[in-house]
Image (cartoon, rainbow, N blue to C red):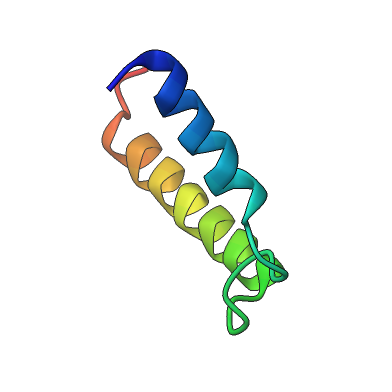
Length: 53
């Protein structure tokens, strides 16, 4: 498979994307808020273990 044919297939796949941006049950605010909570929790855990600084 050549680079040109692979690029053409990717363009076709991207243009057929569909009408919906994502899964209907996924709320972007809930997903982003959950990711923020997880990252803040990891930051808090990291700072608790790194008390020598």
